[in-house]
Image (cartoon, rainbow, N blue to C red; front, side):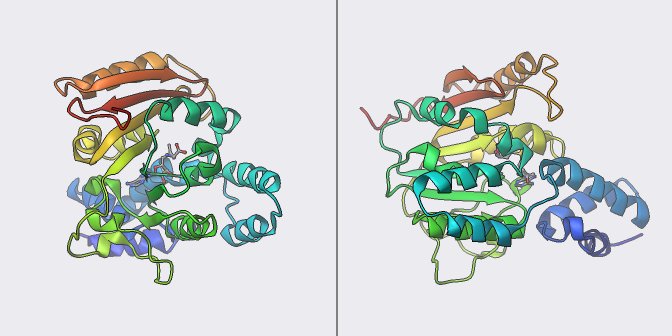
Length: 297
Ligand SMILES: C[S@@+](CC[C@H](N)C(=O)[O-])C[C@H]1O[C@@H](n2cnc3c(N)ncnc32)[C@H](O)[C@@H]1O
């Protein structure tokens, strides 16, 4: 029988998956090998599942170096925004939100008071939407996903935009990021994969808002209990959890009703305050643990 290591090496040898967090590939490889799959079949299945949960969202034309250059060349706020919109089109899931970015962030952040920190889980290219979020200048932004080049690019973007925070590689199947990943990024140091981090120093400040945008259905393909684990494990005052309102192909297929029922099931017994917003392409739930006191009070 093949080892997890051999399967991971074979999968990461392919250019399409080379930048993916080896910890995620290893976790899926372990699941496949536990079913008794032979090496060749396990490699095929790991690639198939990584395609479904990660690679399928990219249009295949991600050129991080070229994007840095065009963002650097943007000479004013308007051309920077236009360039950001064009780059965000490369991630299908982030792209679906572009026609409604202003309305989206105005609505989901409305009434939360000054937001001091945001944690964006399975972020795609959403951190590039920062100018539309209208966060206070000193608010910190933390973002994670599983592609190393993508997170390197987003770390560069946070630094370029003068935003406190950190972009880091994190496999959410391991649960919410460790607190040590939420230390503010030291821009003089190399970006680290927090999966390798050791102890858990103190969080500099509590996280105000966690974004779980369209990640629950994606992660549930790999672990059907991940929704509950993330809801309970993410230490934030407000959780914004969203679902696609149509498939990547554009069909609606009763998805709003389906995911409303899924969210009802996830919330059962949790006694949280819940608000629901329906946008053209996205169904959003804003959750507050009942004991949380809003900033305004
Ligand atoms: C549907 S997309 C949502 C992207 C982003 N949240 C947005 O709405 O613009 C799902 C994202 O989850 C990421 N992802 C998939 N598996 C993951 C994992 N195990 N850990 C962290 N992120 C993961 C994918 O790479 C992808 O960017």
